[in-house]
Image 1 (cartoon, rainbow, N blue to C red):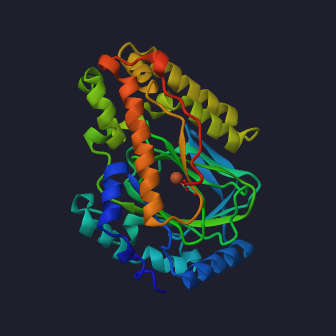
Image 2: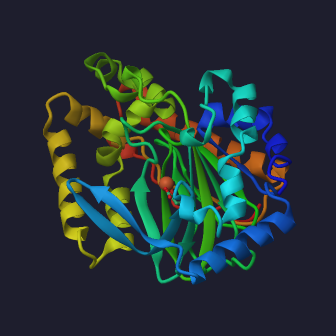
Length: 351
Ligand SMILES: O=C(O)CCC(=O)C(=O)O
Ligand SMILES: [Fe+2]
Protein backbone atom coordinates (compact mmCIF):
# COMPACT_ATOMS: atom_id res chain seq x y z
CA UNK A 1 0.00 0.00 0.00
CA UNK A 2 1.42 3.31 -1.05
CA UNK A 3 -0.39 5.74 1.19
CA UNK A 4 2.86 7.41 2.16
CA UNK A 5 3.24 8.41 -1.47
CA UNK A 6 0.06 10.49 -1.10
CA UNK A 7 1.28 12.52 1.81
CA UNK A 8 3.89 14.53 -0.09
CA UNK A 9 0.95 15.88 -2.05
CA UNK A 10 0.16 17.95 1.03
CA UNK A 11 2.32 20.97 0.38
CA UNK A 12 2.99 24.45 1.70
CA UNK A 13 0.22 25.92 -0.41
CA UNK A 14 -2.39 23.56 1.08
CA UNK A 15 -1.28 24.36 4.58
CA UNK A 16 -1.51 28.07 3.74
CA UNK A 17 -5.14 27.45 2.76
CA UNK A 18 -5.68 25.57 5.99
CA UNK A 19 -4.34 28.55 7.95
CA UNK A 20 -6.29 31.17 6.04
CA UNK A 21 -9.64 29.49 5.45
CA UNK A 22 -9.59 26.35 7.60
CA UNK A 23 -9.83 23.79 4.76
CA UNK A 24 -8.33 22.54 1.49
CA UNK A 25 -9.00 19.89 -1.15
CA UNK A 26 -6.67 17.52 -3.01
CA UNK A 27 -8.41 15.78 -5.91
CA UNK A 28 -5.92 13.08 -6.84
CA UNK A 29 -5.00 12.22 -3.29
CA UNK A 30 -4.93 8.43 -3.66
CA UNK A 31 -3.40 6.45 -6.51
CA UNK A 32 -6.24 5.10 -8.69
CA UNK A 33 -5.42 1.46 -7.97
CA UNK A 34 -5.37 2.00 -4.21
CA UNK A 35 -8.69 3.83 -4.25
CA UNK A 36 -10.30 1.00 -6.24
CA UNK A 37 -9.02 -1.64 -3.82
CA UNK A 38 -10.05 0.36 -0.74
CA UNK A 39 -13.55 0.66 -2.09
CA UNK A 40 -13.73 -3.07 -2.85
CA UNK A 41 -12.45 -3.88 0.64
CA UNK A 42 -15.05 -1.60 2.25
CA UNK A 43 -17.87 -3.05 0.16
CA UNK A 44 -16.88 -6.61 0.98
CA UNK A 45 -16.62 -5.86 4.72
CA UNK A 46 -20.06 -4.25 4.64
CA UNK A 47 -21.54 -7.30 2.91
CA UNK A 48 -19.89 -9.48 5.55
CA UNK A 49 -21.73 -7.59 8.29
CA UNK A 50 -18.71 -5.72 9.69
CA UNK A 51 -20.30 -2.25 9.70
CA UNK A 52 -22.62 -0.91 12.43
CA UNK A 53 -25.37 1.65 12.24
CA UNK A 54 -23.99 5.12 13.00
CA UNK A 55 -24.94 6.28 16.49
CA UNK A 56 -24.51 9.69 17.99
CA UNK A 57 -25.12 11.48 21.23
CA UNK A 58 -27.50 14.39 21.70
CA UNK A 59 -28.18 15.62 25.22
CA UNK A 60 -28.45 12.54 27.38
CA UNK A 61 -29.72 10.27 24.58
CA UNK A 62 -28.07 8.14 21.89
CA UNK A 63 -29.69 8.13 18.47
CA UNK A 64 -29.26 6.31 15.18
CA UNK A 65 -28.64 8.03 11.92
CA UNK A 66 -30.69 6.44 9.13
CA UNK A 67 -28.76 4.81 6.24
CA UNK A 68 -25.32 5.56 7.68
CA UNK A 69 -23.09 2.61 8.56
CA UNK A 70 -19.52 2.70 9.77
CA UNK A 71 -16.53 0.68 10.89
CA UNK A 72 -14.14 2.14 13.47
CA UNK A 73 -10.63 0.77 12.95
CA UNK A 74 -9.83 0.99 16.66
CA UNK A 75 -11.97 -2.15 16.92
CA UNK A 76 -9.31 -4.84 16.57
CA UNK A 77 -11.71 -7.34 15.03
CA UNK A 78 -12.02 -5.00 12.03
CA UNK A 79 -8.31 -4.65 11.40
CA UNK A 80 -8.16 -7.87 9.38
CA UNK A 81 -11.23 -7.51 7.15
CA UNK A 82 -10.31 -3.85 6.60
CA UNK A 83 -6.54 -4.38 6.55
CA UNK A 84 -5.69 -1.62 4.07
CA UNK A 85 -7.60 0.93 6.15
CA UNK A 86 -5.91 -0.33 9.32
CA UNK A 87 -2.55 0.46 7.72
CA UNK A 88 -3.64 4.05 7.36
CA UNK A 89 -4.35 4.24 11.08
CA UNK A 90 -0.78 3.17 11.85
CA UNK A 91 0.81 5.41 9.23
CA UNK A 92 2.48 8.61 10.49
CA UNK A 93 3.48 10.39 7.29
CA UNK A 94 0.37 12.51 6.87
CA UNK A 95 0.48 14.05 10.34
CA UNK A 96 4.23 14.54 10.03
CA UNK A 97 3.78 16.32 6.75
CA UNK A 98 1.18 18.70 8.18
CA UNK A 99 3.41 19.33 11.22
CA UNK A 100 6.34 20.01 8.93
CA UNK A 101 4.53 22.86 7.19
CA UNK A 102 2.71 24.09 10.28
CA UNK A 103 4.68 23.17 13.43
CA UNK A 104 2.20 24.97 15.74
CA UNK A 105 -0.41 22.36 14.80
CA UNK A 106 1.67 19.95 16.91
CA UNK A 107 -0.34 16.90 15.82
CA UNK A 108 0.31 13.94 18.10
CA UNK A 109 1.94 10.73 16.90
CA UNK A 110 0.80 7.16 17.44
CA UNK A 111 -2.42 5.36 16.59
CA UNK A 112 -4.11 6.43 19.83
CA UNK A 113 -3.96 10.01 18.60
CA UNK A 114 -5.93 9.09 15.48
CA UNK A 115 -9.37 7.78 14.62
CA UNK A 116 -10.17 6.13 11.33
CA UNK A 117 -13.71 5.29 10.34
CA UNK A 118 -14.89 3.78 7.08
CA UNK A 119 -18.39 4.91 6.21
CA UNK A 120 -21.09 3.51 3.94
CA UNK A 121 -24.08 5.64 3.14
CA UNK A 122 -26.87 3.32 1.99
CA UNK A 123 -28.24 5.95 -0.38
CA UNK A 124 -31.75 6.17 0.98
CA UNK A 125 -31.41 9.80 1.90
CA UNK A 126 -28.60 9.22 4.41
CA UNK A 127 -27.00 12.50 5.45
CA UNK A 128 -25.41 14.44 8.33
CA UNK A 129 -26.86 17.58 9.93
CA UNK A 130 -24.64 20.61 10.65
CA UNK A 131 -21.90 19.80 13.14
CA UNK A 132 -18.29 20.42 14.13
CA UNK A 133 -16.19 17.27 14.39
CA UNK A 134 -14.71 18.78 17.54
CA UNK A 135 -17.56 20.49 19.36
CA UNK A 136 -15.51 21.27 22.48
CA UNK A 137 -13.70 19.53 25.33
CA UNK A 138 -12.88 16.72 25.90
CA UNK A 139 -12.46 16.17 22.13
CA UNK A 140 -8.87 16.46 20.93
CA UNK A 141 -9.61 16.27 17.23
CA UNK A 142 -7.62 18.86 15.36
CA UNK A 143 -7.65 17.89 11.67
CA UNK A 144 -10.31 16.00 9.73
CA UNK A 145 -9.25 14.26 6.51
CA UNK A 146 -12.13 12.83 4.47
CA UNK A 147 -11.41 10.68 1.42
CA UNK A 148 -14.15 9.76 -1.04
CA UNK A 149 -14.37 6.48 -2.94
CA UNK A 150 -17.22 6.91 -5.44
CA UNK A 151 -16.15 6.31 -9.05
CA UNK A 152 -19.69 6.62 -10.45
CA UNK A 153 -20.89 9.71 -8.60
CA UNK A 154 -22.97 11.99 -10.81
CA UNK A 155 -24.82 15.23 -10.26
CA UNK A 156 -28.22 14.32 -8.89
CA UNK A 157 -26.90 11.53 -6.64
CA UNK A 158 -26.66 14.04 -3.80
CA UNK A 159 -24.43 13.22 -0.86
CA UNK A 160 -22.34 16.36 -1.29
CA UNK A 161 -20.31 17.49 1.68
CA UNK A 162 -21.14 21.12 2.48
CA UNK A 163 -18.65 23.23 4.41
CA UNK A 164 -20.15 26.25 6.17
CA UNK A 165 -17.16 28.45 7.03
CA UNK A 166 -18.30 31.04 9.58
CA UNK A 167 -20.03 34.00 7.86
CA UNK A 168 -18.63 32.97 4.49
CA UNK A 169 -20.17 31.28 1.44
CA UNK A 170 -20.99 27.59 1.69
CA UNK A 171 -18.68 25.24 -0.21
CA UNK A 172 -20.52 22.33 -1.81
CA UNK A 173 -18.19 19.41 -2.49
CA UNK A 174 -19.06 16.36 -4.57
CA UNK A 175 -17.82 13.05 -3.03
CA UNK A 176 -15.65 12.16 -6.04
CA UNK A 177 -13.32 9.15 -6.25
CA UNK A 178 -9.83 9.97 -4.83
CA UNK A 179 -10.91 13.40 -3.59
CA UNK A 180 -9.57 14.31 -0.15
CA UNK A 181 -11.02 17.16 1.89
CA UNK A 182 -9.01 18.41 4.85
CA UNK A 183 -10.36 20.81 7.45
CA UNK A 184 -9.88 22.04 10.99
CA UNK A 185 -12.12 19.81 13.13
CA UNK A 186 -12.77 22.63 15.61
CA UNK A 187 -13.35 25.39 13.07
CA UNK A 188 -15.39 24.18 10.13
CA UNK A 189 -19.10 23.60 10.52
CA UNK A 190 -20.24 21.08 7.91
CA UNK A 191 -23.13 18.87 6.83
CA UNK A 192 -23.81 16.18 4.21
CA UNK A 193 -26.73 16.42 1.81
CA UNK A 194 -29.07 13.42 1.47
CA UNK A 195 -27.59 10.79 -0.81
CA UNK A 196 -29.73 8.79 -3.22
CA UNK A 197 -26.85 6.51 -4.27
CA UNK A 198 -24.67 4.15 -2.25
CA UNK A 199 -21.64 6.16 -1.16
CA UNK A 200 -18.32 5.20 0.47
CA UNK A 201 -15.73 7.31 2.23
CA UNK A 202 -13.32 7.15 5.11
CA UNK A 203 -12.36 9.74 7.65
CA UNK A 204 -9.10 10.12 9.49
CA UNK A 205 -9.13 12.45 12.49
CA UNK A 206 -5.77 13.60 13.83
CA UNK A 207 -5.53 14.75 17.45
CA UNK A 208 -3.62 17.79 18.62
CA UNK A 209 -3.74 20.49 21.26
CA UNK A 210 -7.19 22.01 20.84
CA UNK A 211 -9.80 23.61 23.07
CA UNK A 212 -7.56 25.98 24.96
CA UNK A 213 -9.40 28.56 27.05
CA UNK A 214 -9.25 31.07 24.16
CA UNK A 215 -10.72 28.45 21.79
CA UNK A 216 -13.70 27.87 24.00
CA UNK A 217 -14.69 31.04 25.86
CA UNK A 218 -16.49 33.96 24.33
CA UNK A 219 -15.55 36.80 26.66
CA UNK A 220 -17.36 40.07 27.39
CA UNK A 221 -14.35 41.87 25.91
CA UNK A 222 -14.90 40.11 22.59
CA UNK A 223 -18.55 41.15 22.58
CA UNK A 224 -17.60 44.81 22.99
CA UNK A 225 -15.22 45.10 20.03
CA UNK A 226 -17.86 43.99 17.56
CA UNK A 227 -16.21 44.36 14.16
CA UNK A 228 -12.78 43.02 15.12
CA UNK A 229 -14.55 40.13 16.77
CA UNK A 230 -16.34 39.19 13.55
CA UNK A 231 -12.96 38.86 11.88
CA UNK A 232 -11.53 37.01 14.87
CA UNK A 233 -14.42 34.53 15.01
CA UNK A 234 -13.91 33.52 11.39
CA UNK A 235 -10.52 32.13 12.41
CA UNK A 236 -11.28 31.00 15.94
CA UNK A 237 -13.00 27.89 17.28
CA UNK A 238 -14.71 30.16 19.81
CA UNK A 239 -17.25 30.72 16.98
CA UNK A 240 -18.74 27.37 18.07
CA UNK A 241 -20.38 29.04 21.06
CA UNK A 242 -22.63 31.16 18.82
CA UNK A 243 -22.77 28.97 15.73
CA UNK A 244 -26.24 27.51 16.41
CA UNK A 245 -27.84 30.87 16.99
CA UNK A 246 -26.08 32.56 14.06
CA UNK A 247 -26.86 29.70 11.64
CA UNK A 248 -30.08 28.55 13.25
CA UNK A 249 -32.03 27.99 10.00
CA UNK A 250 -29.16 25.99 8.54
CA UNK A 251 -29.07 23.73 11.61
CA UNK A 252 -32.83 23.19 11.47
CA UNK A 253 -33.01 22.49 7.75
CA UNK A 254 -30.15 20.01 7.87
CA UNK A 255 -31.53 18.29 10.96
CA UNK A 256 -34.92 17.84 9.32
CA UNK A 257 -33.34 16.58 6.07
CA UNK A 258 -31.43 13.97 8.06
CA UNK A 259 -33.70 12.93 10.88
CA UNK A 260 -37.29 13.87 10.02
CA UNK A 261 -39.71 11.31 11.45
CA UNK A 262 -36.93 9.43 13.28
CA UNK A 263 -36.72 8.84 17.03
CA UNK A 264 -34.99 11.78 18.66
CA UNK A 265 -35.72 14.29 15.90
CA UNK A 266 -38.31 16.23 17.88
CA UNK A 267 -36.11 16.37 20.98
CA UNK A 268 -33.18 17.58 18.93
CA UNK A 269 -35.24 20.25 17.24
CA UNK A 270 -36.60 21.35 20.58
CA UNK A 271 -33.14 21.36 22.18
CA UNK A 272 -31.77 23.41 19.30
CA UNK A 273 -34.58 25.98 19.45
CA UNK A 274 -34.33 26.30 23.19
CA UNK A 275 -30.61 26.95 22.98
CA UNK A 276 -31.11 29.62 20.30
CA UNK A 277 -33.96 31.30 22.20
CA UNK A 278 -31.85 31.45 25.36
CA UNK A 279 -28.91 33.02 23.56
CA UNK A 280 -31.07 35.59 21.83
CA UNK A 281 -32.69 36.52 25.15
CA UNK A 282 -29.30 37.15 26.79
CA UNK A 283 -28.79 40.91 27.33
CA UNK A 284 -25.24 41.04 25.87
CA UNK A 285 -25.13 37.95 23.72
CA UNK A 286 -28.54 38.44 22.06
CA UNK A 287 -27.73 41.73 20.29
CA UNK A 288 -24.27 40.42 19.37
CA UNK A 289 -25.76 37.32 17.74
CA UNK A 290 -28.20 39.52 15.83
CA UNK A 291 -25.24 41.60 14.71
CA UNK A 292 -23.46 38.49 13.44
CA UNK A 293 -26.59 37.30 11.67
CA UNK A 294 -26.60 40.50 9.63
CA UNK A 295 -23.38 39.24 7.99
CA UNK A 296 -24.52 35.80 6.94
CA UNK A 297 -24.62 35.31 3.21
CA UNK A 298 -26.39 32.46 1.51
CA UNK A 299 -24.41 32.20 -1.70
CA UNK A 300 -22.51 29.05 -2.49
CA UNK A 301 -19.42 27.78 -4.27
CA UNK A 302 -19.93 24.44 -5.94
CA UNK A 303 -17.03 22.04 -6.46
CA UNK A 304 -18.42 19.12 -8.42
CA UNK A 305 -15.80 18.34 -11.06
CA UNK A 306 -12.20 17.50 -10.27
CA UNK A 307 -10.49 20.84 -9.90
CA UNK A 308 -7.44 22.17 -11.58
CA UNK A 309 -5.50 24.48 -9.28
CA UNK A 310 -6.33 27.35 -11.57
CA UNK A 311 -10.11 26.92 -11.51
CA UNK A 312 -10.00 26.34 -7.78
CA UNK A 313 -8.15 29.57 -7.14
CA UNK A 314 -10.51 31.56 -9.33
CA UNK A 315 -13.51 30.19 -7.45
CA UNK A 316 -11.91 31.06 -4.15
CA UNK A 317 -11.06 34.59 -5.30
CA UNK A 318 -14.58 35.04 -6.53
CA UNK A 319 -16.05 33.94 -3.22
CA UNK A 320 -13.70 36.21 -1.30
CA UNK A 321 -14.55 39.26 -3.40
CA UNK A 322 -18.23 38.66 -2.77
CA UNK A 323 -17.64 38.45 0.93
CA UNK A 324 -15.64 41.69 0.93
CA UNK A 325 -18.52 43.36 -0.81
CA UNK A 326 -20.96 42.03 1.75
CA UNK A 327 -18.67 43.42 4.40
CA UNK A 328 -18.70 46.93 3.03
CA UNK A 329 -22.46 46.92 2.91
CA UNK A 330 -22.94 45.25 6.24
CA UNK A 331 -20.54 47.32 8.27
CA UNK A 332 -21.35 50.83 7.14
CA UNK A 333 -20.25 53.34 9.83
CA UNK A 334 -19.50 50.53 12.20
CA UNK A 335 -23.19 49.74 12.48
CA UNK A 336 -24.82 46.81 10.80
CA UNK A 337 -27.28 48.08 8.24
CA UNK A 338 -30.03 45.58 8.57
CA UNK A 339 -31.93 46.62 5.49
CA UNK A 340 -28.79 45.81 3.49
CA UNK A 341 -28.47 42.26 4.72
CA UNK A 342 -26.78 40.62 1.79
CA UNK A 343 -28.49 37.48 0.66
CA UNK A 344 -27.45 36.26 -2.76
CA UNK A 345 -28.51 32.96 -4.12
CA UNK A 346 -26.70 31.85 -7.16
CA UNK A 347 -24.39 29.11 -8.27
CA UNK A 348 -21.12 29.18 -10.06
CA UNK A 349 -21.14 25.77 -11.63
CA UNK A 350 -19.54 26.88 -14.85
CA UNK A 351 -16.67 29.22 -15.22
O1 LIG B 1 -19.74 11.62 4.91
C1 LIG B 1 -19.17 12.70 4.86
O2 LIG B 1 -18.88 13.27 3.79
C2 LIG B 1 -18.80 13.43 6.15
C3 LIG B 1 -19.13 12.68 7.39
C4 LIG B 1 -18.92 13.50 8.64
O3 LIG B 1 -19.06 14.68 8.65
C5 LIG B 1 -18.51 12.85 9.89
O4 LIG B 1 -18.40 11.61 9.93
O5 LIG B 1 -18.25 13.56 10.87
FE1 LIG C 1 -18.13 15.54 10.38
